[in-house]
Length: 457
Image (tube, rainbow, N blue to C red):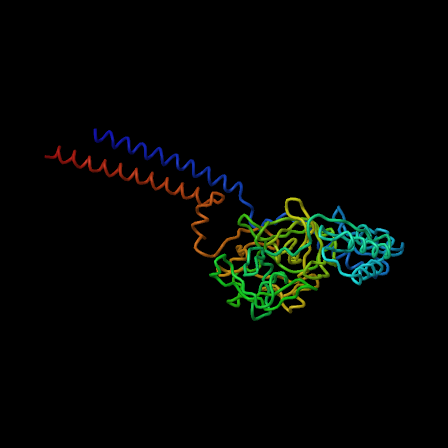
């Protein structure tokens, strides 16, 4: 009876081990099939070359003969021109000319006239290169009387100034993309920058005045840093100095959610029509296109000029979060209207202008020409507000994001998206098979000894 039970146990162990091997193999196969190839780029649209071509043509021909450039639906640069000679020069350069009635000088004169008019909170305007017009928007807080006054100003400027009512309220998105907290509210980290000696967080200026103390936890136990420089209104950027003085390792990655991050390799100015991505601590990752440059917004707190206008949504708490494309830093979230359910308009502080005013550059960068600068390295465990990705991540590529704390090896081995769990099952099954075989051999050896002893005696 005892031998029968032992045989049942051994047979059950062997069957379980074989089943474990089959299950582990299936888990490894599934994980490998679903694994993102190392360094695979996220599907960001390529726009840098087209934008550079258009900008160069505008600079060459001058603002009296052009009215801006943008990226067409086919990805090629389009340049608005006011005469046929300029159109011919654009064609020779390989770009598409678009004949328009108003030059950039006229469009800028229109925006200057709007700025000279009495300020109305809840309004915004920008030059729409593609329609050759100046678009003025007013949110729901603008009274009928103010709307009427502003409409008369627009009518005096000319018919190319168009008035629109927008949903929601133009407001800063107070309350990279990971959350940073202070007594005044919650914002999102933008990009890590340095002056060569000390590291900082570049974020929105409306997030808090100078000397604001920031934390990376709700309890206020872990101090992140202190705001040492802020500009708002007028501009909308600020500099938070790390309490430790350093951002830590891998500070060039911004979080995009689901344990992923994007490596930032430089900074540049965007182009109208360019596809862009925004990440924030409230709404996560969203994409859209640049609709205008040099936008002006009259927030209740004051007027901010020179902003990037997009159709990317944002919500309170996303302020200061990064705007980027193909691994290039473009801006930090300023404000807008609407939300990520109904959509809306969002404005961004250009990162190049902010860094020039603050005399900083992206952490670890050495500069890469006029387009921007090469970027940096995301924070250590002491700076968990920014994403952390492996050093193997390529520029603009998607890479796993996580803390450098105690969740590393265990988390990877137990994550079913990795091959770790399958390998653990296979390893355990092999151990069970070897153990079953060993115990059976040991029992056979002892049985033979008993038999030999009995027959010898």
